[in-house]
Image (cartoon, rainbow, N blue to C red; front, side, top):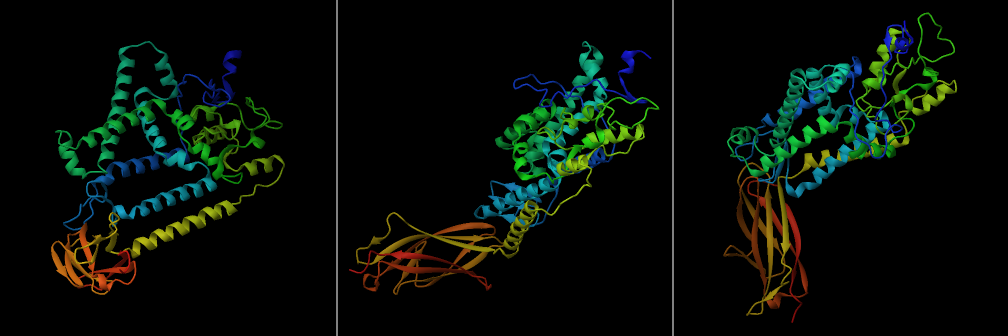
Length: 494
């Protein structure tokens, strides 16, 4: 065997790959043209987990808009719908109104705390498995592999001169990418309009202009980010790798190369003893498997999304050279140091930051659950006119103007009784009707109705410059009531 050929063998039956970790921070200049990364397909439990999660995530994204949920005749029946026209957010049995934007804030807080908790325990598993950039990039790479072959074939094809074979493979790949990107943009707009109605009108030009605009934007960004930018999004555009440093500590599980076991590294000859050397045969299988183009053996890196594909690649090599698997595995920085010192590993999952995140998440979730389960079907708000504060009429009486807002969250048209308690002699009118204390008003199902009211108090009944006024609203035939308190301003007795 020639020397040149021998240098390509890491161990008997194991090829040593000629590859550099082109996206490694030590190899990357500040301003540098992107070097194409050709991740090699690997097989193993983590790759299988990524396939399963990708299928579930994409299936949910594309098909959830078509799920139906019966809410009665007055409400849309799409299970998940962000209805800007109707000013509602529907999520199965949950219905959020504009006045309840705090629920959206609560959901965002819960999502952030859950991400902090998972990161403190398991590192960047969100990035490696659930991030949309990772999911769609995985899909695009799978399509690329289908048309152009695995790593070596893709490299060879890119270096080859243009031919019919190269042209149809490249055109076919980009055509499928565009179809996926268009389906992604199309699915996105279905979350904001009824899915079936939108599909029936979209291709005939009958959908709103905003639908075509966002369809184009999502199609372009999906094709660009997942097809051509890939690892650059994670390295340069995404803030989470930088934020995560504050969310974790040295006890968090991360994908790590076990230096204590792997070094010193180097090729291994058949029959050669493993004494006095590490298990790493420097085959660089971990590098060619990495979609981020880094070398995990260089330690924890901002670019690592912890997809764990390098674990599958390394485990496969360890089996071939008859060494224990786990040279690259989920481990903590503290345990790597402890092994180098000859100490047993210690895993501390219950740590102060983990408890803080978990307790905060439980509190936020409990508040949200309590709010959603006890929320009322009726809400009342009263706004007093500020300009002018009050008007003195020709007979000396004083008038204040108010806007009464009644929110009917039920799916039925309801009649509401309005009662007003205030100064003696109080009179009020609404829509040309004059009453002393009570009135019934109609509010359609799932609507907010505004009523313009004028409250008048005789001058001789005024004793102070401002007096309390209480509006009480209740649906007829129900014990549910809501009150709203405001003030009546008069300038004081004269």
